[in-house]
Image 1 (cartoon, rainbow, N blue to C red):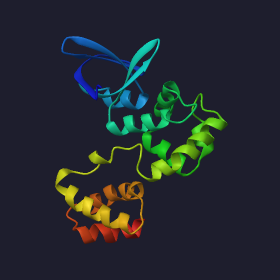
Image 2 (cartoon, helix red, strand yellow; image 1 turned 30 degrees about the vertical axis):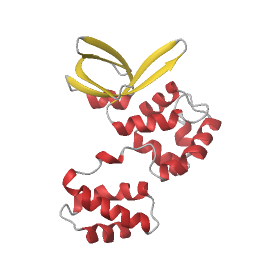
Image 3 (cartoon, one colour; image 1 turned 90 degrees about the vertical axis):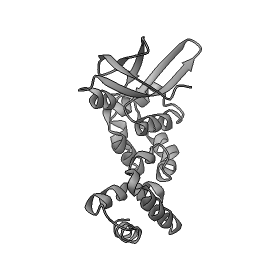
Length: 195
C-alpha cells in the first residue's frame, strides 16, 4: 500500500495534482483544502488513499494525514462515496466538519453540494461517537517533540478523569501556546478549566 508520494509538483489545479516522483507522474485527485496548502510550493508530499474498484483505480491525495484520516472516516459511512467526501473536504475545513458533526449541525452538513438530509443525519449518527473518541484525526502531529512526554502524561491523567481524547486535543494547543514551558500539573490544571 502507498502511504505517501513525495515529489515535484508538475501541475496543480483545484481538483488535481500531478506529482513527479522517480520519473513517474502521478495523477492525484485532491480537495480544495489540499490545493490551498500546496499552492505556493514546488515540492510536495501527498498522503495517499488508494481507491480501487473493478473499473477504476484512483489516487486521492491530501496535504496532511489529518485530512486523510477524516476522508477515510467519511467514506466509511453508508451512502457517502469518495466524491461526496472530497466535496465535503473542499467545502468545509476538517475542523468545521468535525465540529458540525459534534454539534449535530445538520444544516451546516447539508450545505455541502450532494449531501442531503438523510446523508447528513447518517453522518451525525455514525460519526459523532467516533469523533468524540478521537477517530478521523491524526493527533500525532499536533504537538512538538519536546513537549510530547508532558502532553502525553497530562492527556493520560485527563482521560483517567473521564475526559475524551478529542476534547483534550482541542484545548491542549491553546494551553501550550499561552504557556509553552508548562509542567504536567500546569497543563492538567489549565485543561480542567477549559474542559
